[in-house]
Amino acid sequence: MIASTPSRTNLSSAPHESIQTLTRFLKDVGHPTSLACLADQILFNFAELSRYPQGSLFQFEREHRRYRQIRTFGQVETVVTPSVMDIEHPLVHALSSRLHILNPAGPTLASQTEHSAATTDTLPSLHTVAIPLITHGTLIAFALLHSPAAQTALSSVTIGLLTAMAQGAANALDSLLIYEDLRQSQSLMRRTDRLRSLEIIAGGFAHEIRNPLTSIKTFVQLAPERKDDTQFIDEFSRIVLEDVNRIERLVQEILDYARYMEPQLTDENLNEIVTSCLYFIQVKADSRGIKIEKELAPELPRGMLDRQQIKQVLLNLLLNALDAIGEGPGSLRVRTHQFKKPDGTLFMQIDIEDTGQGIAPENLEHIFDPFFTTKHTSTMNAGTGLGLTIAHQIIQEHHGDIRVASAVGQGTTFRITLPALQQ
Figure (cartoon, rainbow, N blue to C red):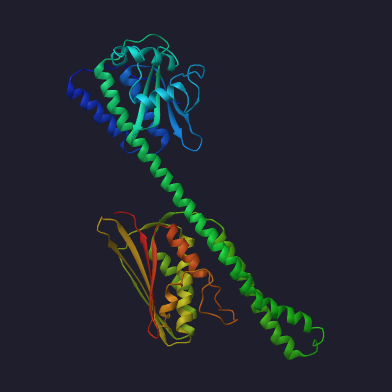
């Protein structure tokens, strides 16, 4: 509820002052940050113009087929205005059918003798004005302005201005509601996609752990009989340990994917994150004779990033690149730079290029699918097929983009694009 009381300003009938009032109002409601802020602006301006000290705004709820009070101005009593009105309520019916301000004491309805009595009966009191907010011929909301005492009848100029302001308010409210519906739909789609992926993951999980469980089960069954066979015990112990580690990694990656994590964004230097990741893989690269080439843009803008999630993405891609190159020789190049889109939006870009074996064309379109992997050996480095899926999800949640280009026998390039802070 808005606590303040509208100021008692005088509205001149001069056309230019009316235009200024309308322009100011449209500016006030043009960029609402929330439904509550928009409702406050609508009620305050309506009350200030009409000089009615109390008011309430009702919004249509499609799922319940009713209008619910979402905001009040001044001390509005529920005995005067119920908080909920269904579509069959007389007031709602009157506003929906006539599509203009209901003001029993005003000149608009005073001249319409056949409707005056009916309109008076629909309003909570004689000291009430009802203002419909209409888009595409539909009543999406309405404002009720009240006064505990009799008020001077609204002039035709005031009614005309309130009508124009109501249309602007209706357009602003409609746009905000469409945006909120779209935002909720996008969130639902992302969650639905995640659930669909988890369905695939459940099947993949059963398939992936079958072989490790078989080897573990075999070892447990044979160990009592061959406990004195040192070579058997040593070899199978190594295999079982690898398989247990594989299952453990698989479970952790599934949990990471299933857990819905909103990125915790902070102001970050992307070059520093890249350098940190390269530091972790340097020793492994050196041991394989793989040369790391680093080309980081010196003037790269900063970005709002979840540092740990971006490191997870980069480390996944870098380790995949080392595995693709194998024992070397080969090279791994990491480059960063910035670019602007035609609309002026600034972006950061990371390219990770390797000289590995490349990816077959028929596999490229599935590279981000859950459980898709070209690593099938049962070793410590075997892929679970979830790393790139998780990486893709993280980049999407950063409002970025990740793409891959590859040629068999020549190498692979992953390109990540992330929004940058505008300079």
